[in-house]
Amino acid sequence: MVEANNTPKIHNAWLWTQLIPIWTYIALLVTAIKLDEQCKIYQNKYTKKLNFKARFVYWYIGLTILNLVPILNIVTIIASLVLFIVVWTNISKTTKELSKIYIN
Image (cartoon, rainbow, N blue to C red; front, side):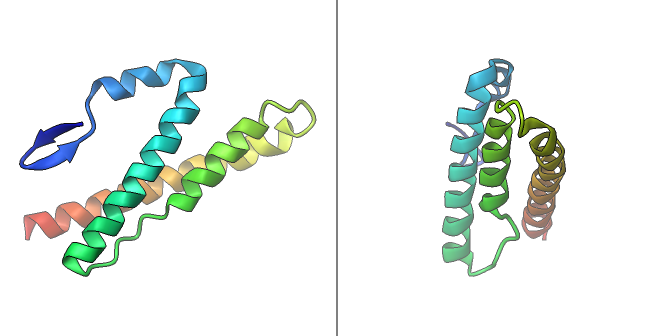
C-alpha cells in the first residue's frame, strides 16, 4: 500500500498483475475484502452510508471460477458478464460519491 494525501492507495503495479490468469481471481478477492473494510471504516468514522456492495464481487469471482466447468460455462459466462458490469458500475458510483464528498 502506498500513501497519497495521508490516505492509503493501491499501488499501480497491482493492475499489471491482472495479466496473470489465476492471480486475477486472488487479486479480485483481496480487492473486494479491502474495499469492504475501507467502506466500513469510512461509515464508522463519518457516519455516512456508502453504496459499495462487496457481495457482487464475491458472486462475480464465484461465477468466473465456475466458467472452468465445461457444461456450466455457457450459463456462467453470461451471468459473469452481467455481474462484471454491475461490479464496475457499483465501484464507479461509490467513487463518484466519495469524490463529491471530498470536493465539498
